[in-house]
Image (cartoon, rainbow, N blue to C red; front, side):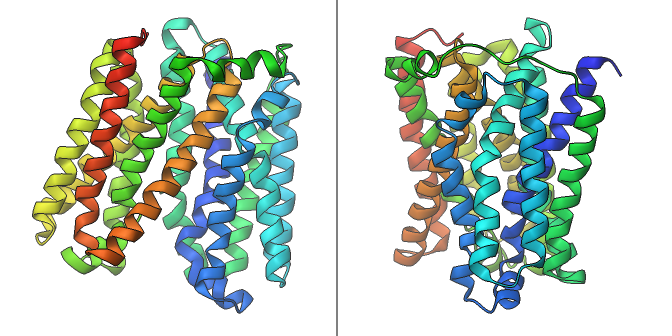
Length: 382
């Protein structure tokens, strides 16, 4: 393994650990509620407050830390994640435990954003998208595979062990970074220089494109457990297997997306919302039959992985002179899109029924297609 690959794979494991810390608790909210003797809604703050904190701090934290030496920055973030997650495993006061979630969330975008920037910087130009995609693969693995791992640990050993799992994986990456990661200087570009790109038309329309892309995806996905359980009658272990298939397909999609973007970015960007809309229509039609639905779920996961590549590429290509800021906005607006999509799905579920979230997801994706098409017509995509 050469030096560049070693650096990238350490960052992949780092993003996996950090995203597992963020999203892993999604599957253990009942255990959190029981452990702290709070309602399931209060336990949900472990997820929502973490995501909200990322959405806010991703706007400026990566830019502020972009001037500092990369290894020291990564060691700082990983130390904060390790220490506060360990503390959170042993406290019994819910509010203190919530604080132990919020503090790492403030530093989350620093690691993820600068990892993508470093991956792009240390390889040849023609390998840039492939290197960045590997880091995004760690993000996807943490978001998807981190959930069933955490759920298994909490179910069999309890809440504290699940939190210690987060601490251990972050500690391992901390040690690997300390030993093997080289010193990489930061950039002297000022905060104002990077943020100034936010005033450009291409940047603004790209932000809206990323928001609606994620909103469309999560309008369909945010209540998928309820959808599959109610309509397809897939629950329990079978549900975990289906979601795991979705996650593996998503990781494959990350790998595939990086290669397709290099070949023809314009075509991939414009075709993806159309293809996933057809898949969601298939889920809507076939939801009473398990086998076709599972096949559609696998295809959906594949496209979701490609979407992650597209969102990151879409932002950075709109501001190549400010990659840390653009990657931070990618993370921030992705979380905004998730919030919008989840909220819209909740309204649909309460109003007309769980099945119709797929149709509303398609509607959002068609609105996004207009934004994507507008940018490709008005601005150079490459």
